Length: 150
Image 1 (cartoon, helix red, strand yellow):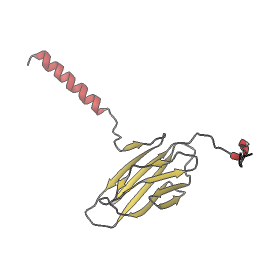
Image 2 (cartoon, one colour):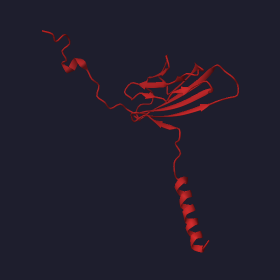
Image 3 (cartoon, one colour):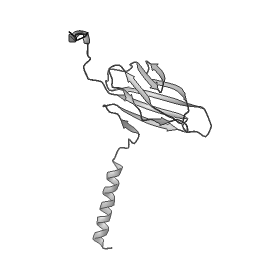
Image 4 (cartoon, helix red, strand yellow):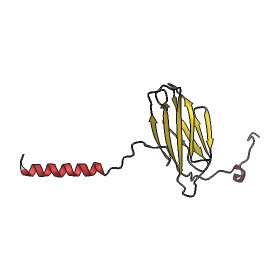
C-alpha cells in the first residue's frame, strides 16, 4: 500500500466513525398513522409466571397538559387513569395482543401486536399528539334527520 492509499483509508475510516457516532439511536421509537409515537420494551425472566406486568407512561404534546384522562384497551380489557402512568397485569397467551391508548383531544395510539407467551414485563411510553381536527356538532350543522321518501 502506498502512503496516499493509507491516508485515504485513514480519512475514510475517520469519516465513517464520525458519521455513525453522531446518529441518535432511537431504535425502539415507533411511529403511528398520525403524528403520535410510542416506545415499546419487553423483558423476560427465567421464572415461569402466568401473567405479564404492563407499564404505561403517557406524555402529551401540549405543554399545558400535564394530566389528562387516558383509556387503555388491552384486548377485551379496559383500563382507565387520570395519572401519567398506569400499571396492570394481563395473562400470557400465544395469541397476539394489541394495546390502544386514547385520550380526549389527542390522536389514539395502537401498538403492534405482541405475543405475551414468553414475556414477563412490557413497558410502553406513549407520546400523544394533539388532534387538531375540528369537532363536529350535528346540532349546529342543520342536518335533517328522517326519511327522504315522498
